[in-house]
Amino acid sequence: MKIITWNVNGIRAALGKHLKAWMLAQSPDVFCLQEIKARPEQLTEEQRDFPGYVAVWNPAQRAGYSGVATFSKREPAEIRLGLDEERFDVEGRVICTRHEDFLLYNIYFPNGQRGYDRVLYKLDFYARLLEICDSLHAAGENIILTGDFNTAHQPIDLANPQENETTSGFLPEERAWVQKYLDHGFVDVYRRLYPQRTQYTWWTYRMAARQRNIGWRIDYFLVSERLAGRVRDVVIHEDVSGSDHCPVELLLA
Image (cartoon, rainbow, N blue to C red; front, top):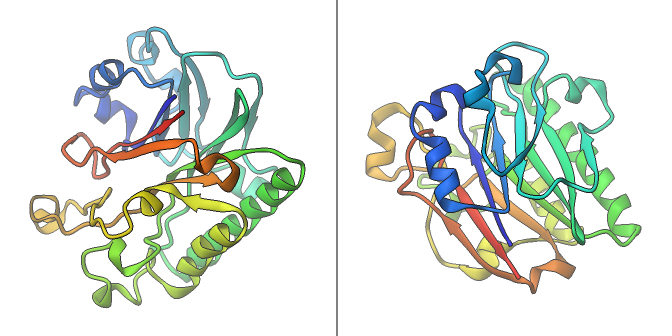
């Protein structure tokens, strides 16, 4: 099974940069988009149509902001939107779909760079999601979390760790929450497969950062330990443009 995640930083802009052609050529079983910045009714019928896929949309209430969408070849057996907490759910950050023997969470975690109040909001979001995941794990569910986590976990996950120790996205309290997920039955399967590899999934548009490969790895697949043995590969498509993020692919037996 192939699952691809991509923060497209605006689905309308990404569609103008051949998003659909690339996706259909890759032919994933599930395609998870974050930061779509549009409601489906704002798209043309052609823009909304991904042939062979069932679409689930969860846009933000605020126009031109946040939002996630999941495209599946098979209609999910179950769909859940949000985290059942209004202050998070108005921002359209979560779609959960059931596929065979696991739940797939497509998530756009909050960005904390607009002030420390947003850092606290982000940490509360991490806490609420983990509370849900703990309950699901206790009930015997397998879970895959994917999307833009907006946090680099370890120094190897960004080009300039020392310079960013006080920057949201690499704050100790943010990194601690990523570790807490790993301590609660999840595996960062890319890092397990490639413990020393340096690759990034996001580059600022400023200072030619992508051309210089001054980036951050903030887009993840966290997989329940019980599923981790079925992971065959995690591929970071750093050569694919169209956003300030690149797609990340999970291959699951």
